[in-house]
Length: 156
Image: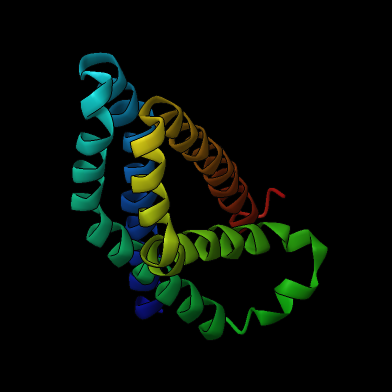
């Protein structure tokens, strides 16, 4: 049972780091850049700062996925995915999948190029879109975390 406690601790720490980073980017970095940096320099600063966090986010998302899989397998909890009462498990996997796809597939294949091209045309509108996307991801992630905590403790 100690290994399950370690897996759960690593899982929670990974999520705190990952979604905490999303929260920082959404609620602090983007608004700060937009308030204190000239519009012509905002996208470049955002891109440089966010890329410094990218490898950390990839590590956290990977660790969250591995520990989530380990706990589900160790608890033989696969059947929960067939029970609508465990909808929050589907939500966790969905959030993990979205971020995994963005970080490991979409960003390297086309999001980086889209961002650069869009910034060249309209940097203000591009950062508006990026900020809205971050708000949506943060809200959905926060709801999922809350539901998962309630569900894991038998409240849902």
